[in-house]
Length: 77
Image 1 (tube, rainbow, N blue to C red):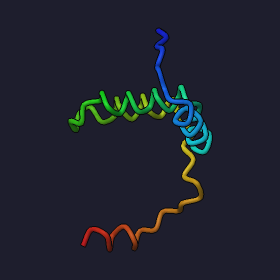
Image 2: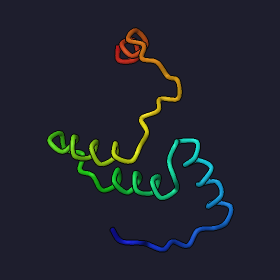
Image 3: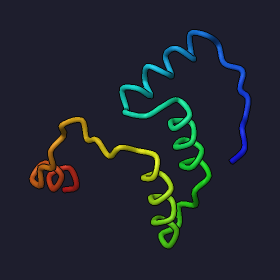
Image 4: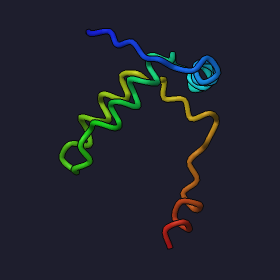
């Protein structure tokens, strides 16, 4: 795996680390997820490859959100 050096303002770096921690990942993991998302094809046959790449680097934490079928159904009517 290759290394990349970025120039980031100190305030943005601090805020980015805090955000990554709140998402249960590192800044490195967050940047990797964003790059995977940005470079993954959005074609229907390629959705699983993108999902697999992103899911390798996330904890899958919903933050307590629970699925509510009625709310989701009503949003699409």
